[in-house]
Length: 291
Ligand code: G1P
Image 1 (cartoon, rainbow, N blue to C red):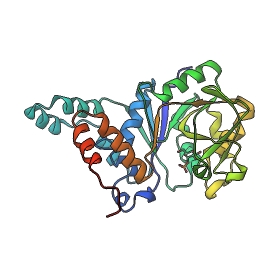
Image 2: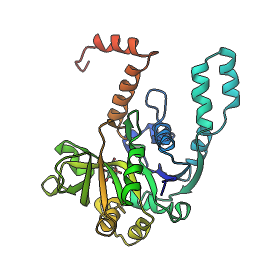
Image 3: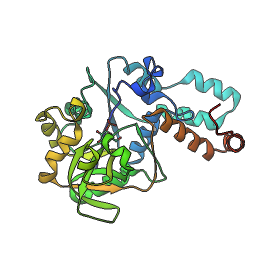
C-alpha cells in the first residue's frame, strides 16, 4: 500500500540553538535561505506523501502555517522586480502541502510526539521525518524507503555508518547482514554506551512505520534520557513485523546542531550559481586561526 501520510515532529525546545530559539522554532532557522522544515516537506512530497501532520508546541502553529500559506503581497513585489526564480520558489511553498497540526504539550520524547498523531494517522502505515536530519540527493531517501516497504510491509529505517563518538547520541541497529544497501534489522537500541552498541549503524530521522507502532508506544515506560523513545517501540515491533534498514548514500547533515547547520549552509551555497564564486573565494583566503 502507498504511504500517503507523514508525521513531522517539530515541538522540540531547540536548546542547542539558544538564544535564537527563544523566538524562532529550530526547524525554521535557515540553511542559507531555506528552513530545514521546507527541505523535509519537499522530500516528503517528492516521495508521494499527500498529507503532512506537524506535531508542534502550543506557540508554533502560526509560524509554520504562515510559512506554508499564500504570500500574495511578497509575490506582487517580486513580480514588479521581475525576479522569476524567487517568485517560483515562494509560490511553490504555498502550493506544497495539505497540513494538519497536533499539539504536543510537553517534550516527553520522540515516541510521545509520534503518539500525538495517532488519530490523524488512522489505520495505515505512515512515514516519520525528522527535520534535524537533512539528506541532500536527487532521489529522495524516503521514496526509496516507501518502495522497500511496499515489497514486504515491514518497518523501514534509514541508516548510516557513524563515528564511535556519535553512537551514544543516536539509535543504533543490530543486523547480521555485512553488506548491501538494504539490511535486515534484528534489533534497535537508543543511545547505547559505546561498549554496548551492537554496530556502528545509526538510525537517521526517516521511518516507515505500521499503525501498530502506536500501541507499542502506549506500552512503553521511560527509556534513554528519561523520555518515551520511538526506538524502544520499534524494538518491540521488530520480532512481529520485521524491519529493514536502508543504508542511503546521499549527503547527510545533522542540522539539529549549529555546526551542522553551518556546514549544510556552506554546502548549499557552494552548489548555487548566485553564491558559489563569492563563497569559494572567501573560503580560499580564509585564515584558519581563531582570531
Ligand atoms: C532521534 C532518535 C534516534 C535517531 C536520531 C537521528 O534522536 O531517537 O534514534 O538516531 O533521532 O537524528 P534525537 O536526535 O531526538 O536525540
